Structure formats: structure tokens, C-alpha cells
Amino acid sequence: MYFKVFFLLSFNLRSVPGTINLYFNNYVMKNYEELMSEYTDIEFKAHVELDDVLNKVTQEVWEIVEAKEAGDIQEMYSESWDALVNVASASYQLWVEPNLEKPNDSEVSSSKLLIDLSDWNSKIQWYRNRYSRQEETIESVTESTNILISDILSFSNPNLKALEMLENSIDKFKSREWKYFENIDLKDYIRSIPDFPKEWIDFKDISPLLENRDAMKNMIFEMAEKCRWADIIAWLDARWFLFGEAIANLLDKPFVMIRKAGKLPWETIWIKYWLEYWSDEIELQNWAIEQWQKIALVDDLLATWWTMWAAAKLVEQAWWEIENIVFAISLDEQVLQDMSERQNLWKYTLDSILQYN
Image (cartoon, rainbow, N blue to C red):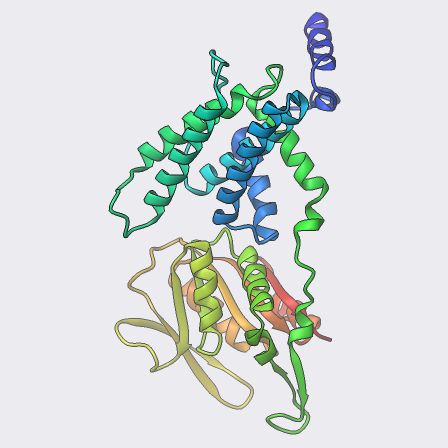
């Protein structure tokens, strides 16, 4: 046992600096799923989309070729890390299961690498494009992915395994992740209008947000990040359905409307709830949702908790599970706390993107 530990330490001391920390303090190497889940979480928060990742793969592969032609071996190793992690990220998003075993034959020419890169890009584009004349299957994309990964690994440090390369590249990405986040304060795009539509009401106007592409994109990503693990996105009433559909489309998830009674056709389930001086009803269509699916309940503004409380009860009544409850704007942090404590919603995650006191 002591000999094995010493062998591992001495082996990695002779390889790339920094990899020795993989074996200190009873460190256990993360598996592929853990690494890619962590990496894609950072990408998502940094608003990195699949097309960005595909473009990055092309850039990194060309940098491998340039480093090899320049005779810069260490730079070639470094670029192979970056290329591998981006190919893995694309694979993870496309549900491709890559083969990360290093090839026995490490002799791969730069021209073969570039040809296989082109083939990989083409097959992914054909696979994603429903109007393409060339039909591609996930099996074909997986095969092309594995060929490209094998090529990239042949340009990598022979003393490092693929998972070690992924972890090193992810650690590098994490160390500078702040650079990738857009520095946008969404409150700058929410306009407060006093005494509108009635006296004593401080109206939050989202028109500036809708007019600014970057701010709108940021809001959608921020809300989508809170809903990633739900099966279905459910949005309350009609005002912000454009946000709800954009979030559902970004996450590739179904979108369900919860509306006031009488607004939805077909079969619905409904619930009646009491406000201070009157009652109201909300409903949703129940034909497309299976029992025990996880739903993210999303609304634009939290001023009072009555409607969201009724929506939560409606979801529970249908034997669906609430993953979390998200608001774009909350006017009072105390309302979030009261809603959780007083309405027996403490078991759910309640969150908002923007908070006003």
C-alpha cells in the first residue's frame, strides 16, 4: 500500500505540475458525470450556449495544430485539455456518451485531426437541423465524437488520463469564471413609476428590460438557471408568458399556463381561493402532464402570496411535485418569508431574481 501511494506521487511529480494535488488528502477523482455537471453549470450561468461551445472546439483544435507546427509541446498539451473539455461539454448537452480511453496508436497527423473535426461539426449540424437533407442519428454523432476525442487525446500529455485532463481544464475555467459573467444590473432596466395606476402604488415598469436585448437575455438565463431541474415550467397568468415560453424553450422543457378561470379551453382542473374581500379561481389544462412530474412554478411579481399559494395547492391537488417557486421580482423579502412559513410552503425552494424592500 505504501509503495503504491509513493508510486502515484512520484509518477505525477514527473508529469505535469499541478496534477499532484489529485492524490493529496485522500482525494477521490470525480467521475465524468460529476465533472460535466459541474462544468455545464458554470457554462449555463455564464450564458454559454451550445453553438458557443461548438465554435470553441474549432478554435481550440486549430490552436493544437498551430502549437504542434511551432514545436511548442506544452502549449499543445494545454490546448488539448481545452479542446477535450469543450467536446465533452457538447457531448453532454447532446446526450452523447463519449469514449474517453486513450488510443493505443498515438500517431495522428494534423490533417487527420482537422478532417475529423470538420466531419464532427457537419454531423452535429445535420443532427440538430430538422430541415437538413442529410439525416444523422445519435449513433453516427457518437461515432464521430469518439473519433475526434481519440485524435485530441493523441496530442495530449501521455502521462495524463482523460478525466485528469478534464478536471484540470475545469479547474482553470472555474478560476476565471467571473470573467465570463455579464456585468448587468437588471434593476437598471426596471423603472419605478410612483402613484401608477393608483395613488400609493409604486409600479415596476419592465418596458426598458424588454427594449434591451442583453438585459432581456440576462433575465431569461437567470430565471432559467433556477428552473433547470424541473420537468415542466408553469407560469401564472398571461402578462409574462413571453418570458415563460422563452425559459422553457431555453431549457427544452414543456410549458404550462396557469390562468384565471374561464381563460383556458379543453379539460382543466381548478381551485378556488379566498382573498381579503372576495374569492377567485385559477385553472390549468391537465391532459399533458403525468403524475409526479416536477414542476417549477414561475411568476413575474410577488406582492402578495395568495395566487401563488393557490397555484401550489392546485399542483399538489393534481399529484404533481413542486420542484421550486421562482419570482422575477419580489417587492418585499418579508413576503417570501411569510409565504413560506404561514402557508406551509416551507418545504419548497422560494426564490426571486430581483428584490425590493
